[in-house]
Image (cartoon, rainbow, N blue to C red; front, side, top):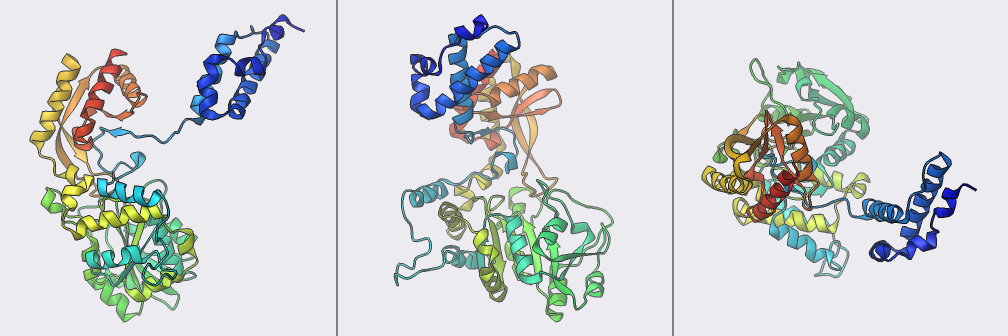
Amino acid sequence: MPEGYRKLPSVDRLLSDERLSDVVASYSWDTVADVVREQVEAARKRIADGGDAPGIDELVAEVASTSRARYEPTLVKVINATGVLIHTNLGRAPLSRDAQEAARRVAEGYSNLELDLGSGERGSRHAHLETLLQRLTGAEAGLAVNNNAAAVMLGLSALAEGKEVIVSRGEAVEIGGGFRIPDILKQSGARLREVGTTNRTYLKDFEEAVTDETGAYLRVHPSNFRISGFIHAPTMAEMAESAARRRLPLLHDIGSGCLLETKEFGMAHEPTTQESIAEGADLVFFSGDKLLGGPQAGIVVGKSKYISILKAHPLVRAMRIDKGTMAALQATLLHYVKGEATEKLPIWRMLSIPLRDLERRAKRWARAVGEVGRVADAYSTVGGGSLPGEQIPSRVLAIEGAGVMLEATARRLREGPTPVMARIEKDALILDPRTVAPEEDRTVIEALRLALAGA
């Protein structure tokens, strides 16, 4: 037997090493024992290949680092300094304190998720949201599922399975993460019938495509792109009148779930749910975690006769939201009912921060990092497929340097105790205070000092 094998400590010897006592206490004896066996086996292979036997110090360090890397929680709080307000990779809209507290309360124990407290009998989970959705959108009824893609698929499956759904060619789009309208139609059991052209579609294109096989008209918000110039599309009111005459449902996927007038925040108009309902859409689909400012959810509002069909469909159980999401979404909707959305919801607070406040905070960051940082003009974006092409003036911290240095600094920010996400733009690392809560400023400053110290 090669001498290297004799130098290897036993599994029990490693597990009893006091330097691993905290690791064993955190992850259990059996879990760490599996990691120890893996490391000992890797060491034996290394020796068999002609390498030296690792010492006990090296093995202990490997066991500890492997255990932590494998079993520490991977979903952690991140500070978003990118300037993208609805950042899909960072969890989209942050929740209000009321929404957080509502989710926490129902998570602590049992709740009346599907119980009518008055009668003591089984109730409907849809009841927690429906009255609020009716009040806010003007719709007859509503429900929520786990995301907007699910909501659209549910609507198509319930109302148009085995039938054709007519869509303008310019709206058969791919949004983010591979979400393609043609694919959703296919999975729902409906068939896509494209009409018109990419830039110009007329009402007659829809009407000429109607046959006995037609199940619905579908309108889709283009979300993350904008077509301008020589364009035409029928109005929602025109499509609603046409669909009604043909006894077809008009479905409208508006994406962002906006309930407020974005022009009041200095941006272009974003179609609202209320407008779609008022213009005659039979069902409107939108996200809960974009401009609505709530948790991930897909919300459907519209005519009660169609909502009833969706509620009875087998897919609705597979797509339903849990009690925490329900509570957070209800709290979010209540902010709108109470007229406090712009004060309580982070997404609307971020959109309305005055430039002078952003400049003050960016200056504080710049002073903390010294001569490497300066305050600069830049733009924030809404993101999440909302208000495509819109830019919001901002004042940011810019750290200039060579590309390799900027990448390394950005990486150290990401790998810090509280990860901080920045963006690299031209020859500068940009940190935008618009998407950073004021109470996070101290953490950002400390993260910057640590990251720059390692440069």
